[in-house]
Length: 151
Image (cartoon, rainbow, N blue to C red; front, side, top):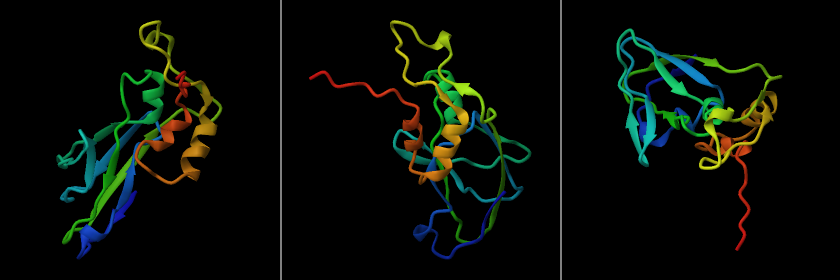
């Protein structure tokens, strides 16, 4: 659960730093009457996600991006405070157990679409995720295959 109290100077605070979720999917419920607080990054612009009564928000996480070799990309998002209203949200994360080895599924890479992510243990990634600062999608660098510069 995330609770964001009203803030007289919301321009000076950030409710939750920009990040993508380490899970496969995140299901988010925003409390009825909550102000806009969730924003997604689209084309380098922060776009507010308007709460819809009785609806859930589904975020694609880093795990699904890796499994699909980038076909489905995790969404970078943040939470911002509101000047007059508090905001409550409940997030449920769906992710593999820590023992599971992950990597792109074979149907998502071939000679025309090279593999972008290495295989790794989900527990290793989870530890990396929770021990590093939330900085956009930077935590996903953990799984990316580094391409050597041949120049």
